[in-house]
Amino acid sequence: MSEVLIPTVDLERYQWERERGRPLSDETLRDCGIAAQAFVELGVCNVRDPRFPKELDSAYQRATAEIFALPDAVKHGRFRRADLHHQVDWTPELVEQARDHTELIEREISAEHRPLPWPVQDLKERIFVPAPDNERPEQTAFPGLNQPCALIDAYPEWGACAVLWRGHMLQAITTFVEMLAIGLDAPPDIFTRLMRCAPHLLAPTGTNVRRFGRPGAVWAKFHYDFNLVTGHGKANLPGLYAWTRDWRRFPVRVPQDCFLMQAGKQLWWLTGGRIMYGFHEVVCREEMMDAVRAFLAAGNDWRVTSTVFAHVASDQWLEVLPPFRRVSPDLSAFPRVQAGQMSYDEIKAIGL
Image (cartoon, rainbow, N blue to C red; front, side, top):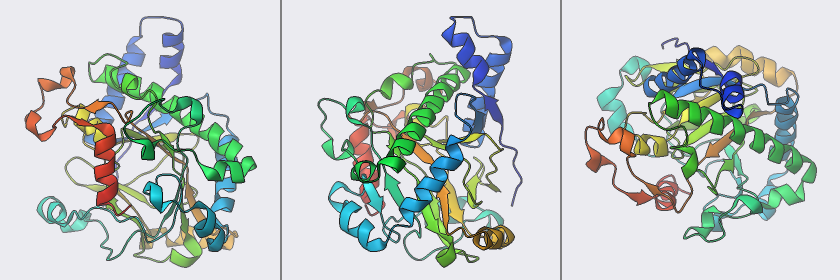
C-alpha cells in the first residue's frame, strides 16, 4: 500500500481576495493549481476553512452517533423511505450495494493494491438530509430527489446542528469548487452556477463498530460517488482508503481542523474525464485494530462520518463544458443527460 501526501489548501486567502474584489495573488493562484492537480491525480484534496466553528465538528458527530444508536424499530418504522429510493431520512445496513467493478479491478489494479472483497451489501447505515424548502426548485422533473426530511423535525436538537453543519460544508465546497475551476483554467463559476437549487445531501454515515469492527469487514465497498463533489469532516475512526489515477491504494489522512474534498462522477462528466472520480472504500483492516480497540474501550459504538454530497441541480444538463472539450479524448463517452436522470440511473445500479 502506498503512502500518499494529500495536499492541503487554505480557503481563507482566496475568500478574502474575492470578497474585496482584489485580483488573485500569485499565492492564491498557486493554491488553485494545487487543488486542480490534487483532483486530477488523486481525486481528493484536504482544505482548511477558518469560517467553520471549531466546536461544531465534534458536537455534530456526537449528536449524529446518538441518532444512529436509536432502536432499529424506531428507524425502520418511522424513517426508512424505500419509496423515495432511500434518498431521504434513514438507509439501513445491508441495503446499499456498490456496482460490480470486478472487470476494472482485474484489468487495472495489481494484487497489492486491490480493494477488500465483500460478497454482500455494505455494512454501513446512512442518513440523508436533502435541501431545505427555500433551496429546493419550484418545479422539477425529479421530485423524488427534492423531498423534505422527517428526521430533522423529529429530533430538532440534532436537526439544528445538522443544518448548521450542512450550511458550513456547502460553503466550503462552493469556495473550493471555484478555486478548482480557476486551477483548471476555467471561469470560477463554471461549476457553481450548476449547483443552484441542487439536491445537495447531508449524508452522515454510521457503522456499528462493536458489531462490525473486525479485520476484513467492508463497511463501504469499492465505489465512486456519483455527485459533483463530496465534502467530509474528519471521521472519528480511520477506515477510508482511496486510489490514485494509476490505481495505487492509499489511506486517506485528514489533518486536524481540516476537511476532505472528493471528486464525484458529475465532475468527471463535466470535465470530459480530466478529473477522475475518486474510487474509494471504507474498511476495517488489520493495521487499524489498535485504533478500533481503543475506540470501543472508550465507550464508543459508532464510526460516524460527516459527509455532504454536493450535486448539479437535477434539471441541469451534464455534458462536457466548453473549456474541457478541446482536451477530452472522446466526447462520445460523455453524452448529454440531465443530472437527475443520471442520479436515478446510479441509484438503481446500487440497489436503492
